[in-house]
Length: 490
Image 1 (tube, rainbow, N blue to C red):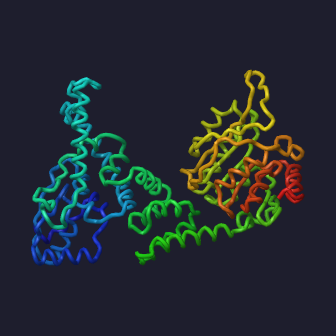
Image 2 (image 1 turned 180 degrees about the vertical axis):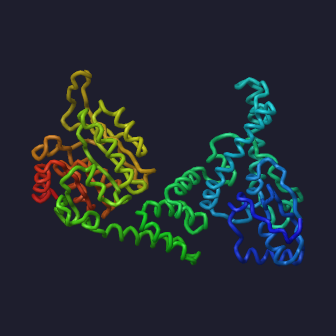
Image 3 (image 1 turned 45 degrees about the horizontal axis):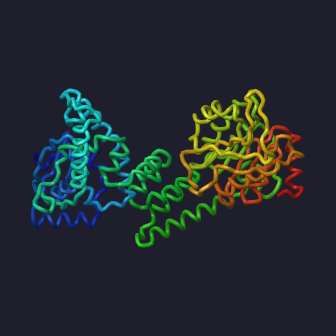
């Protein structure tokens, strides 16, 4: 192949970060002195490994030496040749693993086809007639596991930038496998093993790539780590983009973590300082600002909650009606929450025992089920006729958007206090609202109750220094809640 022919880089090769300018200058000097020691590997007519060597040869006018890749796992080959060269952080490895997933899945399908055609390429794992669970089967599995571990060690060993050996006189891996261990498990597990990364990091990075791609990009670049990226992804979209731009401009490697921490803290302060009248228009006739941080909207939450900006709510804590005719509101509530909650925000709602199957199914269409909380009645058990059960507790179901951004440990059993029935016949106690608002949100964050009733959730939020907005369709109850809040309960 002539030097004048312009070669493209294979997409798999492009997944690896580029050399730094300093590393590239060192490579050019090495090729000047020693010539091109390691060939440039081609696959499907493109450069699979050696894009920097090829560029250096073009600049120096040296005719490169090419070798055609003929193995069965170009992904494994590229990783084996480049992983140690790039000195990637653990977070960058996790991001790389995410980008490898489509190629790993493609290779797995191709292997399945070939295995089916050949009658079992991988011995006992391909179906050679050895009974599963037998002594012989278990011995072979043990042998394969030991070989897998060695293969994975070899896969991730160091190789020199321009050497054809691994540093000990042996030829480096050519990707004519992958180890059998890479044929088992889910794709995220395989990708994590391949890049020598933490599987939990890979799963987190995958969520970032789907929910906040701009944050995922700065993880790839090594500008932030996974934990910092999670915090940035929790921010509202506009604020998040601003933080990402500041992170990209941060060139001080020695103080990077400290600087990023300051940028995130500054963004959170900016959000917490927003007043409720920035969230809903104060000239809305249905909007009533009760205190500096507490507001009530008279109207149906299905319509009025649409006015709240997307991804601005940290917690929705509410108590819808339990009757059969009202069960449809749970799905509507979950749908709105999927838009209005921040990434990682929570929706916690009371529900009747009888309705759990239907409600869990309908809400799970829009949010991720997290847990069931048991609220123990303060007045002892009550007899439930028809079911013939003494009921000692009430279920409170917990859903999240994506996954929890707040990792505070919380109890899933709570003893309720005496509800303020004088304000509302269906009122719940203050204790449970206070406890979960305190542990699942930060001061200044927004808490919403779509069925405000007598204002219990709003009062709990106010006591904790949170912003809160309640929605109530019954105007008499709106007035009752305002009276309660202004009467000193806050």
